[in-house]
Image (tube, rainbow over all chains, first blue to last red; front, side):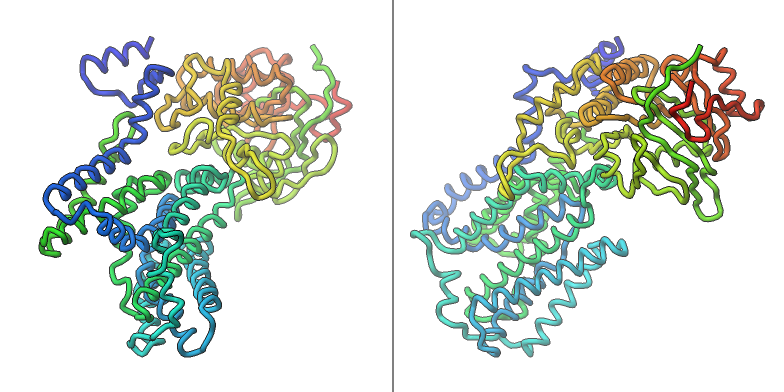
Length: 346
Length: 268
């Protein structure tokens, strides 16, 4: 009875009551419900298609295989770290130190090979151990003393960068053994190596987020940590794990960029954390935690990258790109907040 | 009338809990029999929540011991209680708003396919079992794939009850399940509780709703300022006023049978 009244009210006032018994109809609404669930992703995908159409028409060298490959290579490190950042943000945390980690891991990787004469694999393993330690540090402070990851990582943003400068005497460490260059310039079955690595990491990230118990529990930690703990979810373990993961991916990214530059440099990755977080947020992941998908993140990464690439090809002032990227983030968040059916604007 | 003797399911002997200088519970004995519905009542601050927390494994008692089917147990975490088939319906319902009905019902206990470390979620199987667990629990049943955020109060209650129904194998602890519900929704929720009880579960019902106590319970336990002052078969009560008298203290105490000493088998 009250349900009908509520529905009548919907019709007359044209506004949905939050307290009405939501009449969820099974079949006729299924498609609409599906579309509503994917609203953010559809919005970003539409925006991406629009950009591609626009730049294809305006910039003659945009819609070429060469340009596509170069965009995908440029965006590979952002995409790889964004996979980890999506998990961090879904867990309700943030990591602002990934840009500094990129610089530090590239520098340490180069130092281990050039100064210590270690092999590339051993150096890579060493960098991963360092990344795990950094992630463990952030996560440990979070779960043991409740120090917000925002604070810890804003500190590390400066501290890790400083360590990289100190270790390298502010100089580029190189050259690296020629084989290392294959990590960036080589290819696997005709596909450039950075693109292969990116696709593999994205696939793994998608799989663990949407097809495994770990993914489910990650959403629960970000959505309602108290409830998650009641049902046996190891909340603290997951919180530490996401920081270890994102730092390990940043280390991989740092090594890839060192291969590209043929050396380690402490300045690499400046403001990179903002690119990553922007792409993740544009893709529909919520800073408040508990909501987000890997497909959205990838669309967000591609959207921001396409915007940049098209504007460069059109000869637009890079300053304009900065302004555009800023407003795109605001626009994307506004769009996802407009979601119909039950999103509360608190 | 006499209550039939029941085998003891979960029993607490001399349970005590102190928070700093505050005695939340002072030497409380409680026994819940097989397939028995026990109502736990008392004023705010009488110790009901503390007792439920101890029985669900959310907190350890300062002193006293727990027995499950006459064997001593230590509920050092909610996992242990859940492992014995004890399910709790929390006052806040314990739902993650950002997840679907099926995801909530299987949170922490996901069904998987595969072997060893190579497992994937069995999403379809979980949705199917969710629909089964929800069956008959609400007039307006939410689909298994619906986001919990979009459900009404009654539907959320149905989801929490369905989870308890799916996983319980012995006892369901209901912590003020009707506090946030209207009259119709309360009635539906209690129909759901009856269904779970008919399937063989014991129930501990914490509530302020006296008609509900009279209607649902086999026995009533009354707490006042951390002490057990009432433990009476519901059939011996003339009216809800008897319970209110115990809650307010206008009647000092009424403890029937030897349950207070923990010897449940002799209850007759």
